[in-house]
Amino acid sequence: MRQDMIAVRAAAAAFALGAVLAGCGGPGAEPTEAERLGYKGEDLVDQTNLTFLVTSPTTTNWVPERVVSVFEKYEFTEDELSVVEALGVLMPGESYPALPEGYAKETDEPWFAYWTRPVENFGLKGVVGVLTHFDEDRNVFETGESYFSSYWDTREDALAALAKVRAVFEEKFRVKKFHEISDGWVAEYVRLGLMGVVGQKADGKWSCMIDVRDKCRSGCGAWEPVDVQRERRARYEYTKAMKAWRVAVADVLAKNHEAVVAAMEAKGLAGFGAEAVVNDAPDGRKVKALFGQCDGAADALSLTNLIETVWGERVAEVEKAIGVKLEGDIAKQGEDGVDAWWSATGKSDLFEVRVDVAVPVVPPAPEPQPAETEGEQPPPEMRPTGQWRILFLEAFQPGMALPPRPVLKLD
Image 1 (cartoon, helix red, strand yellow):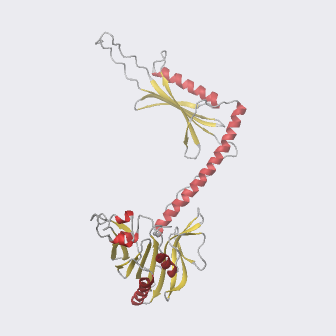
Image 2: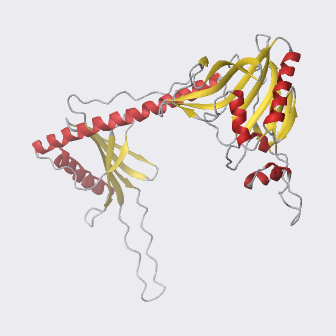
Image 3: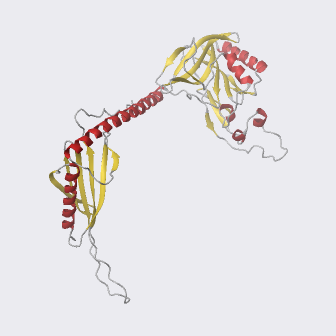
């Protein structure tokens, strides 16, 4: 975490403690505090919602939720814009093609970076800083919180500096309300989030920091621990690599398909007439599948005759359509509900193929029962049925190969 920041920093998280409907007093009721301060809509619903600000490992400060975050959209007031200008900070939540001259990177972490610039504001020498994330896709710096910090040898000097800044805000910038917190305060505006706090840095110096946020626009978000940033970076890089990989794969497959089609035409192969279902193979290729039912014919009621008949038809179809002969022995097996399942594979210089035919167990026909009424007919004789499928994909032609698939690397 940046050296500049105070050891105790603001971390906001909504923690609802209760709910009281705004304006529940009916017509003529006094306006609520939130209404008087200028909030509207959803921000008026719950008046007892609190959020906590952590300013030390042992201190939690509770403030109204609206002080930290809002649901509605608000425009910046003249006072809020003047505060940002007076502090000399960058507008929090804004995006910049480049950071202004004078800013230097203080910390460079996997996802976030802090940039600072020396300044003198309110008669205090210090730095202005900003949390950033560089968006590589849009080529801009997204920002989160901005801050102005001055540094002191003692806690008392830092608190005196904080009081000096507060006095300026009270006199010039019409703060809506001050909320007291441990070694600091929150100056409430409707859109601008503004907090002043004193804390000790790792080097022993005391910091007086004025933290500035935009309650309506999070920008790059809040700072996260480095290990969380590292995983976030890895997932981003993986997602970006996968996007580029898919584009490269699609290009290779399109060119390979053209080569396969040309070779089929030269060999007089027409392909399958039916439209195939397409799925992705693990290596990126497209697996195509044809499916069908195999019903027993009147002269082929046995399972053996049925599967042999359908198998022969599929083998002949594959050889005629794409010129592939199945190789080796037929794998014959069974499983729950299947009496016979035959499978075999084959390949050529153009295709890789697998054929499956499965015929389920046929329950015995029920015993004939005497008809209860004169017009009733006995049930029809049950015949074996089953399913077949042909899976095939295009083999890579000379000079064609897919790029290696990216790997997500998490520490």
